[in-house]
Image (cartoon, one colour):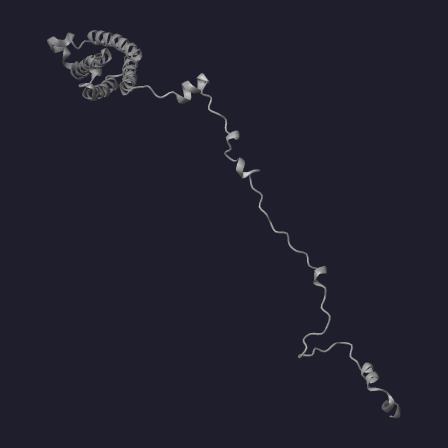
Length: 206
């Protein structure tokens, strides 16, 4: 007891000092904070890479090839305007129709198919006449040839249809020679020649 009384109070405080530091609420935390900079690594910001090297060079004048206007192929194919007139385009359709009738005669198609092709020709011819009746095209040889040939084909088609319809009565009729196979073959042969001439005429019309 005597020793404790003689020992200074500062030494006693040091002897009974705790290992951990208590927090004084009036002074805040008085302990030692860890060094966070040693374990913290800042994340790298992601930067998207553009598809093109430089945006300014996109659609650049240096990257676009000039139009080869001196190239005849480019001028004739790319720049050349369509000079086909509506009349010439209509003639091309008639060429196809006339060739189908020509092939029908050549291949010996039956009456029904031949009549159907001629009927289609006649319908288009009527529209053709109305379209160009009051125009300069009505004076063209090709215009007159189409109308003439359409009427000719119509007459032959009617003849074949009537012959097919009345063939069982021909033996008792004076008009049997008109519908005879020989006469029909003659009419078809003449129509075939006319078709060939008309097709060549229309193909050479510009």
